[in-house]
Image 1: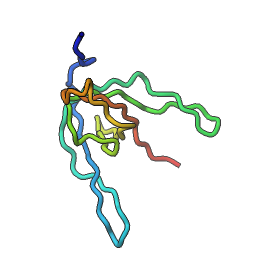
Image 2 (image 1 turned 90 degrees about the vertical axis):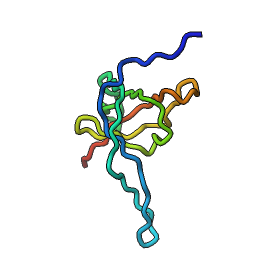
Image 3 (image 1 turned 45 degrees about the vertical axis):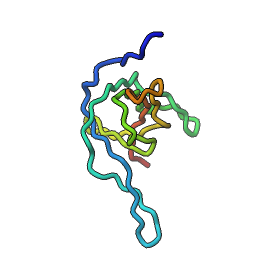
Length: 112
């Protein structure tokens, strides 16, 4: 059986931000602390078409591969070249070997 091969080198520096929760006056507040530098393979494919209120647009998405890290969750964020991305769905532990991780991210944008 052929072994899994990464789709590219892990040469893109990214800052991984994991969520922490603080309770302020009984309300849980989500905060992202200082990031940790990791290296990933980052492929964009030009984004994903989405339709909102009858208008078709493009959402910036990417496929990310990296070394396995149990702290990367669906609540994590990744900052790549000044763009902030949220992990979209649960990261996949390739072949359940705890060696590589693959997940999809989408860019977080502000706007009205």
